[in-house]
Every structure is written in C-alpha cells, then in structure tokens.
Length: 346
Image 1 (cartoon, rainbow, N blue to C red):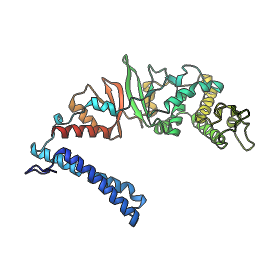
Image 2 (tube, helix red, strand yellow):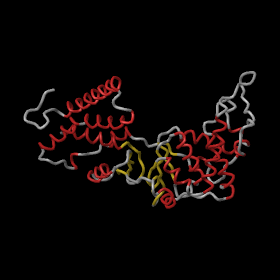
Image 3 (cartoon, rainbow, N blue to C red):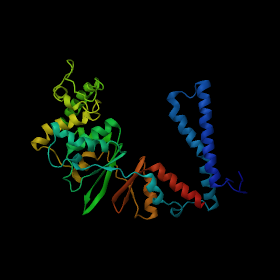
Image 4 (spheres, rainbow, N blue to C red):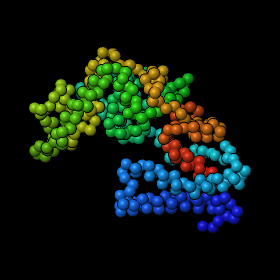
C-alpha cells in the first residue's frame, strides 16, 4: 500500500476497500479457528460476534471517509452523496404483478374451479416480490388476497408484497409494501370465518401430506388418487381427495393448502356475495400497522432522495417515478452504491 503523506488516513479509497475485505476474511478465519479449538464463540453468540466482525472490517472505509471530511473542512454535503439509479436498477426487483383476484375476476371460485387459480399462484410464489394492483378499488377481494398471503407465508416466497392502485388517473401509484406474514396476521383478524377456514385448510392439507407420492399404476403411466385413509378426519380433507395429488406425476399438490382454502372461502363467502373489495382506503384500514410507505422518487432533488434514504430504517425501500411504482431495492445496496460513488469522487 502506498500511503499519502500527512493524512489522517494515508491510503486511497480503493486500498481502503481492499483492506476492509481482507480484514473481514482474516477475522472470519480466526473466529472459525477459535471455534474449532476452543469452542468460542458459542452458538448463542454467533450473531453478536459476526456483527462485531462486520463493524471492525468497515473501519478502513470509515477512516477513509473521515480523512476526506477532514481534508474538505469537516463536512459532507448533499452534493457529495448521490444515488445513481442507472446502477440501482440492476440491483432492484420490480416483481411479478399478480393478475387481479388471482386471475378470476368478479366470480366466486370453488370445487373444480379452484384449479383455475393454481397456475397464477405458482407464478406468484416463484417470485421474490408480488405486486398487487388494486386498480380502481374493485379488482381484488379480501378472500383472494388471503389465499395469496397464506401461500406466500407458508412457502416463504414471495417475501415482499407491494400494493399499487390507480389514483387521480395515474396507474400503478405506489401505496406501500409489507411482509406476507405481517399482512396475513392482520387480514385474519378481519373476519372470524377467515381464521377458521385458514386452520381447517391447513389441517386438511397436513393430513394428505403424510401419504407421500402415489404409486404408479400399470402400464406404468397413470396415477390414481387414493381414497381417504381411515384415520383421516374433517369434512374438508375427506371430500377433496382429488385435489391432493397430480394424476400426471403422482406427486403431492404443493398448493393443496391454498386450493382448499379458496374452496372454502368460495363456498362460504364468495358464493353468497359476501366478498369485500379492497380499495385504497380499505387497504389502509386493514394494514396500517404493518404497511411501509417510505419511498425514494427518481424525480426528487438530491437532498430529498438522500434524506429519504438515510431516514429509512427498513431493510428495503421502494423506488418510484412521479409516484408510480418502479422497483423495490435493498437499502444496503443503496448505501453501498452511494458510498462507492462518494469514494470515487473523494
């Protein structure tokens, strides 16, 4: 490393970053060796030790920034910190926009009709981000959102739900985002039937999951769904054996819980006209405790953008353009890009 003379931290930003990486690797290696030979740190202290290692490894970068601050007279202005959205776009995820009402608008879904929502559910649960477009407030029912959230929470994907709507003639206006589990917890409180149906579907699916894959039938290309075993309980489980397996592959239906849930919601609520629409106002009423509305808009000035970034305490933040949803990005990625850009100009 070639130092710069008479400086608080005599090394260049590039060298500082390399040093930080080296320090991180060395500390992790030492911790691993200590763990093997001395049993320290204990498993209960792993998180604390790793956080400490990460903070220590950042010391060269912090010192490099302090050096620049000192050389410039002791302050960092907003002009020094900028968000390069051309690079951030590569790190962000706009997500999968789920078709309204999981693909079946305005009509109740039960029995064999539940198969119509499975492909949409599979697509939604294969993405890290699901976008729910409420449109004018008549696109989504609570019951369909409940099915989507139940699947997302159980499968742990998508792990972020973003809500948009048409507001003042502007489509896909950003409303907020939240974790599926947090949203599910709030929605289950809205109607006692939601909670009972949710547990009934989960219990029925759990019983069928105990059977495992089906045995192939002669001539070796067909599977037949078995009758419910004698120990199985509950009308929901006993009356929907055909949902439990794929007769093409013989494998269990990975979305059986959600299909059973939709069947019950369709029969008990949707078929009687009791499904509630989700408008922007109703969304706030339902999810106000958990809905995160912070955003950074591409059209804000630099001061507003950096203020919003450093005021954010959540792990992710939404990027908008004139209020329209664009993508959701890791806050840490934004911090890194801002810091990287700052060090390049230092």
